[in-house]
Length: 414
Image 1: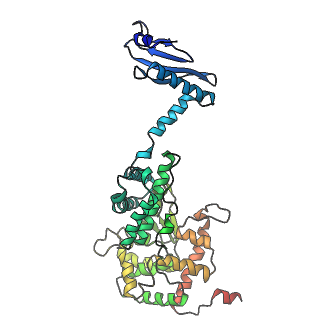
Image 2: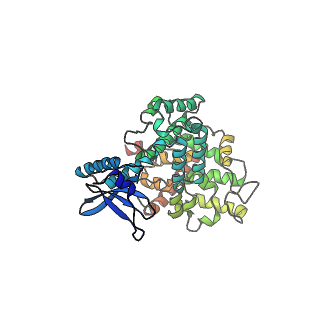
């Protein structure tokens, strides 16, 4: 066994890479030619020899080294590899327990960028900076209390932004879910249960008319619209195709095959994640006879350019999102029917009034739903059915517009 004097006087001959001075129980002092001295505990686990570094001499004295060796031997006796245990302790030491809310939130935000659109990323960043950072900026994640977060959310509610408070809670929940795997075991997601303490919020649906007779009145008003041909055509096509307003107003002539009666929307234009936009399939929209006719009538006016519905002042840009909305208001239907609401109108009446296949309707809406077996369906498998459906829908709208008698489906079944 070593003595403290032997440790102080231990030297390594200059012709050797290192010298070892053995104590007991696997403990030894390793000395380099330059004079540095380090303690190691040598042991075997699963028939492999391993060394656990215990510190440098004289910072770690002989007695302290023996105590560290004994602690490691107890770990080994319990079946715990001392080197692995040390590695875990070091990882715990660099865990995010001491990280501030802002540090973790910004790191989380960067990790989400590959799957977010630039617009969504910007909106999320702005909300963090506006609603959460001013109050939680430098607070350690592990120190934030649920009531502290609730007070922040209630400040948002206090300015009448109930929906914003609901979204802020959702953001904090996701940030904590990102942080927790690297935090101490006793840490928890402080957002649990807080939603019940906030003002109840229900997402506001886009205004949509779903009563056939009232919708017929809307269609007659739309056909009587006296505005420009570009806006009028978009207005008339919107309820028939029931696509997202952004997709319709950015429709390009190059995306249309009027002879085949097909509109192919590139994946990059669809409401999808960044990866899905880059690698997803295009969204194919069948065109009924009525839409093909409307587009052919518009083609002499805008067919020389890129966009089917160009802006009034700049033909190199699509029409504004406000164009059709303003037309609906000018007709007196703006509060009852939104441009986006045509999707809900179609979805409801195609099922309730025409008894059409909901899965095919969802496919035409570009909604990613699953069939009864839980499998995500391939939209192209529904293309033939969707051609038939959308023609039935367009014909039905014609009947509503001219005031034909609309007999409820249940009455017919009786």
